[in-house]
Length: 419
Image (tube, rainbow, N blue to C red; front, side, top):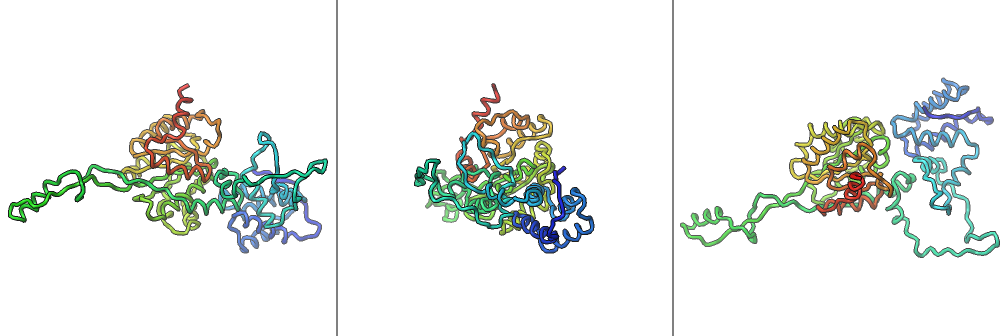
């Protein structure tokens, strides 16, 4: 249950203005709130009253929150707006650049920075001195010539720690990414004047038309075809922010011509499997992901990887994996199902796919080890094991697909698994 704090009726009596400003902050943070819902919130508070703090919190929550992923942003903004009378100064301190010991740096809570920016709404940060000085008034010169550009820093920034503006810029960068693939050589032969294999049947047919005289030797070569791309994306609570960014990337791949993919199929899973392929064909990425989110009802829910993979293997694998498809599995491997079921379904998926690549955002930690039961069950049945927590990690995905010998971090983790 969400936590709430002591509330009191404002002395100036501007409760309607405060609720309106609070709703606008939620809208700037990404919640779909219009004038109609603001009016409904004011009327609901008038009916429920303002004498009980729990009623006030849940009345606003019932009006403004429609999806599970919106709860965290709502809680952060509610806490900052209705609790601390000096919330603006507090948020300013969150946005100020600071120099601190790396070992003492603590990652901000997932939605805290986005909530702060939504409430600030473009307010200017406090002025900083032109050049920092120490206690003895000795000027400290800082050489910024080797400082990485903002875009370069954004490439390696964790999706979970991005602010609203950074996330929007990251989505624009993901829309420019490509995922090229090489064609697959198949056993079927095709006519080729420069081929190395003689086509005796075509040569004899041509000779019959010439009265039995062979005037030309025809040749053939092995044909090629483009593989399909199948994406299985975990949308459970622990994967929510990463899944959204990955699906932006998948949408860009699905709608970009000339990359070579025959088809791009996308599925989401949490507690159930959902096919969102047709939604990703929409050119507008926001419309596509909104439609996909409306169909996938288990966003930020639990995780049943084994059961969802079983549903895919039974209902979809023969339809979408029949032509040498490359499968991208995006998940943290934290599963509630039976590990034996998960291992069995992973093995079946591995045998059905041309190449199975597991993208796990937990690999952003250097000390990551396969201790979870789900990770231990899945790891032996993948071709490559890679990170998926930043733009740079998705850019490196092209190397894993083009190089059949690429294993990512699998070899290192399998060594830990065997110890």
